[in-house]
Length: 135
Image (cartoon, rainbow, N blue to C red; front, side):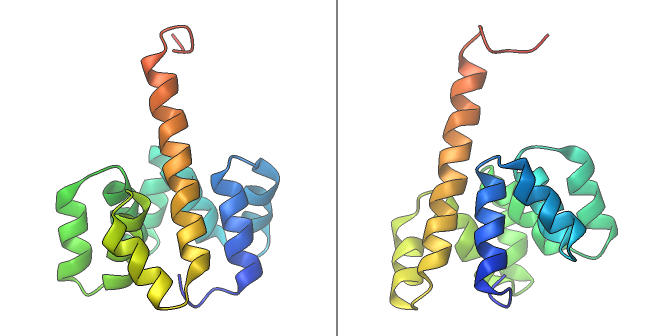
């Protein structure tokens, strides 16, 4: 993730915020893995499978770790995807991970982490409100 240009990371953040225009822009402008990552964070199983089949298992594990899968977080660490593990921890509100991004002058990932946290909160709120549950 650290190797993507800033404007691409900004587009990724907008897509996490459910701005479909940015998600489609990522998909159609050479970043299908980031579009799939966004869709996976949004709990789209097909996107997760696409990432796994197209040699992005670290993104797949990141998605699972963002949704509190300890095994996936362990896989990231074991397979030396420390940055993605730290990003997942920050996306789960872990203060030491957020501090690490701050200390390493990677504020964009703090912003992205907070966007993921906000999405998760909205999703969890929707699931707890029976008026919003789709049948």
